[in-house]
Length: 347
Ligand code: PEP
Ligand code: MN
Image (cartoon, rainbow, N blue to C red):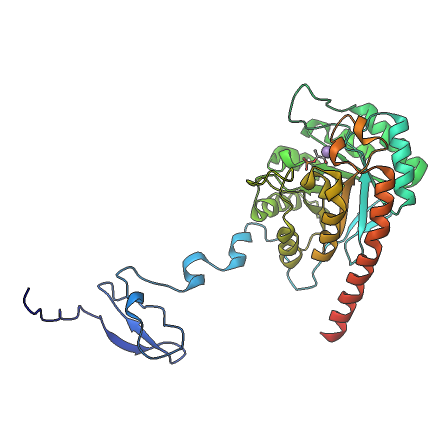
């Protein structure tokens, strides 16, 4: 092989010119595209950076981080302390307090519901949960008591003063559920049922919107935007765990989603450690992490006799376990409030 003359540069190749900040940037290649400057801000561009494919910097390639949420403009914070408060009965969700919703997965009997309601109220919960219409993995599994369950929930509210959150599964049921409940829950399996979102929104009741188990944060915000667009601003976003390859928990509790939502969204964020964990022993630690991540509240499954529950018994806390979890959470909530205060006074 003989000696080869170096190839003459193609038009625009190998020239140096100044970038916007005065840094030398390399103009390369047959496309004459701008190359990203090497770290160090000057000197020669390393040869491996010189590619025939135009090289651009991060935001030019994938857009900015926030661009992905642009489909939900009314849900995003306009200013850092922009926050939608949600009023349900005499409970306010958002605004720095921590609200707990607790109760059985399904409303089963009057005794079961009343025993749970009285105990969770005494332990500090403000909202009673309980499904009257149940989305189940199997059509043979208990589907809920329906209207009878709604009536039992209303009786429990009358007896304890707790506000009621319960799931609505069909658009046609929304007015009936809204008659009995203070908050309508949209379940994970329904997050993208836009006809249901519309019907729920139009009742005017606050909505607890659960994240679909394979939904991204952007997907969740898009569904929230849909509810807000139908004239209902009172939406709470619920992180309840997502499907991943992990099998040690029923779902993977996405604590980062809570942090992201608190950063970008103006709606309160509620954590559901029960459906994330799938095992009651794991629930209190996930609840603590939700407090630390900045959630505005929890929704937790509790049952007087979880081993005999008609649904989700393995992940339901006993009444005693719920008492303990609430007592243990109190200092974490106080610490968070103290830290927020310290941050505000520094800022
Ligand atoms: C529930 O809250 O009981 C429930 C079915 O939750 P998810 O929609 O998150 O599965
Ligand atoms: Mn459940």
